[in-house]
Every structure is written in C-alpha cells, then in structure tokens.
Length: 110
Image (cartoon, rainbow, N blue to C red; front, side):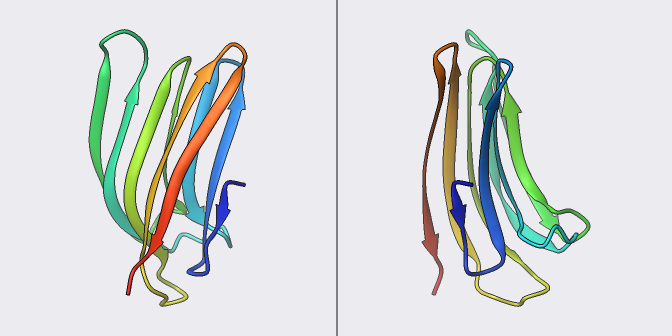
C-alpha cells in the first residue's frame, strides 16, 4: 500500500516477475470509483503510450502495469458512494532487475 486516502481510495504499487504496477482503487472494492486523468507507460526503448481514463462507476479504479520498464498516472478520483472530495493522485513506478521504485504525491481538493 502506497497511500490510504480519506475519500475511500487506496493507492497500491506491486513489483514482481519483471512487472510493476500502480493502481488507484476503492478501498471497499466496490464498483464506485469516479475519476479521470492520464495514464502513461513505457514498455522499453522509445515505445511509450499515454491514454486518457474517465470512469463514473462500474469499476473499482484505474492504473497501469508494465514490464520491465516504467509507468505513470496523473488522475483525480474518489469513491462516489462516500460522496467525498476528489483527490489528485500523481504516481509512478519503474521496474529493474534489482527491484522496483515508486514515487508520487496526493493532493486533496478543496
């Protein structure tokens, strides 16, 4: 667990078998994630992909998995069932054969 947010979301990072991932999901596991933003990942060399995400329920969250390289997400989100404020989540990860590194920042909205 990278962060537990007071608006019902968890930010999680995992590292295994040449794969690194970061997810922003509802802490309850309910299909009530609400948010949008950008997710980018690099699968090696100059092959980078960036794509928009927009979710208004029907999913537990957003994220990426990539290996053996790096990814990044920049989203706002909340668990809409709780009706709390959105949070801005900016998180990334890089995989290497010596382990993974994670970084990020969470900014609550006003």
